Image 1 (tube, rainbow, N blue to C red):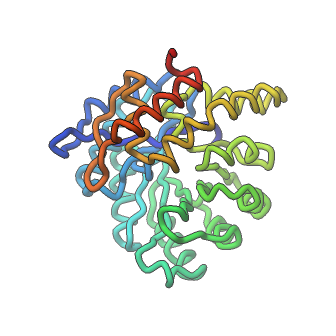
Image 2: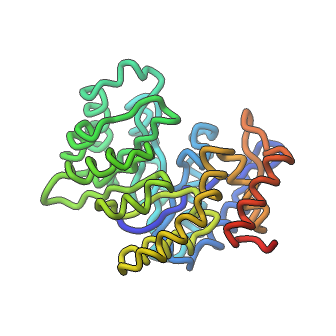
Amino acid sequence: MNGIFPPLPTPFREDGGLDLGLLAALVEGLNGTGLAGFLALGSNGEAVHVDEAEAESVVRAVRQAAAPGMTLLAGTGRLSTRATIEATKRAAGAGADAVLVVTPFFFKGSMSADALVAHFDAVADASPVPDFFYNVPANTGVNASPATVARVAAHPNVKGVKDSSGDIGQLAELVRLAPPGKPFSVLSGNYGAALPGYAVGATGAILAAANVAPAECVAIRNAFLAGRLDEARELHLRLLPVARAVTSQFGVPGLKAALELLGRPCGVPRRPLLPLAAGPREEVRHALVEARLLPR
């Protein structure tokens, strides 16, 4: 699994319902920008805000709108192992090429290495498609150690990890401990860690900023791989405020505001998230202008 993937936002109407038409339009607008594929129902896709029937319809809609050859990842992590297995099978049936499984987090104090390994092994055993481990401690309160991920990676159906900790040392350790002799992709889920992550062996990234600036996120990685480090660094730094605005600063509401400002609306967040207020929205607009994604 190489390249850049955007974690797609899930469009909702003002009445709270899904807007699959907007979702299809968003995907179609991202086709042809150099992306390797899409992640449906990740954190930025408000996966925790959709029910099981909606989740299946989202995956199916993205599959239908994605250009041929685009890889589709679907987030299927649930709080129980049984529910995760069921969600994984539904996603595969709806067209997902692989699934991204977040660490269970409600009983976070009990999520020992042994508990996580047993959970991921059971899911991987039952999954009809390859599994990817998803570590996002800012949202879950669970930070799986590289040693734990390495134990999970020994399973033949576990093909990689998305690490959103933002810790370069942790990303490097994931690369170092990757199982020899099998394809295993280490993907950065944090924009700030993506460029230095390529230097330590990350094969790609899943970035909210890739929804907003897909060609630019692809260009950063391509410049790095071609040895044009000054070009990669300049573009990475130019996009940094935008990447921050659509993640840690303003979250999903910030991402949806940015896309609307760029003329690619994707609805409103689903409650309890609220649309971005006027002041923060202006900050997002300013970041887009400074990144040369909007005219002054």
